Image (tube, rainbow, N blue to C red; front, side, top):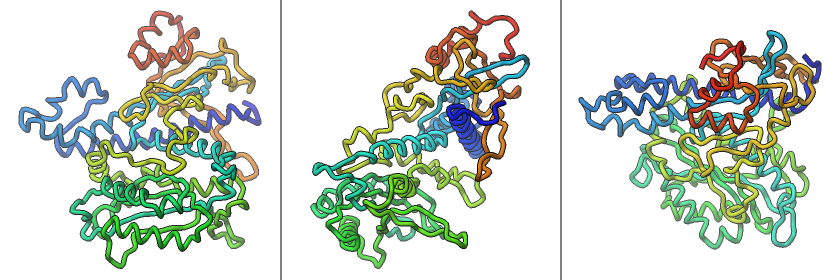
Length: 456
């Protein structure tokens, strides 16, 4: 193995390793959903096809009609969505030794999928990085040098867990925020922004804590306190809040830095002074809440299945993330279309936000490095291995000045089902065949004797 990994190979390993870890979280979520449903004598088969075939039997239609089906359909959909994750790896063999290099992944875009939330955070970070490097307003001013980057949090008083007569009020709080953004003060003071809704279980049994996190670019002509006061007054008005609780938090974006004694302190972003990396760090600190399924975990680290079930039941057709102002129609900030990110392929499962079933895989095979030599690999040097990311083993070492852990090898496990696709099929063809259920048939047509293993 190479002493120093080529950058492209190291990046591929890190990507594949993270997908594997997120897939583990998805598997744990699936197991806990199964355990939850078993209390209702609902036992789910491993694959969705069998579930659909025996649906009425699984939900005990003979005893309850469609009651259990209607009650838990969304939870079952989540369970199968996050269970469906596939990896497409370049497969190298040298004697009896096998090595893998990740090329693409197939996963759900369900809003509670751990892989998708991690990937979405990557996509949004890259979009904002590329956009903010050069984005200017109509007067030609760089956004990062002119506008104040702010973090706005909006909540509402919810005595006994109820607001506007409802326990689950995500739709209502979004509507109130939309009404406030239509007001003149907002259009004068705020240039652009984005928001996401976070839903957590409240403390002390006070129902749900549903709130909005928003990244805002504020016009610098106004003082921060002036804008904060205007937002509070208008937020109170649109939400009917006459209590002593303001329901808002408004603060300049910041990053964390270590002090000499090792503690952390906030370092606030200053337009025109903070560099792009620091600025983007502040943005990501603000919008990280949009991609945190861990908010759905209990204190002991297990998943709050009851809360998850409630969220699924109450957020159909509710947009929990959006942009506004000058960001609203900014195509450079779209992250649904993944053609610019060929190293990871999304394939629609349950909740997709794009019509096409897969991203662009053009050029992926040409960028693969041979893990035995560290040199760019010719297409004839590797086959394609298809299987669950959970079945890949990683070898790591401590590396670099900061002694960080680095992945240096990836190997297929003998304990998970994989298919080795004989050389001759392109990655795009393999994915297409896999999605249509025809991959095994095609492999059997062209397979050569003594493949290292095939146990799908």
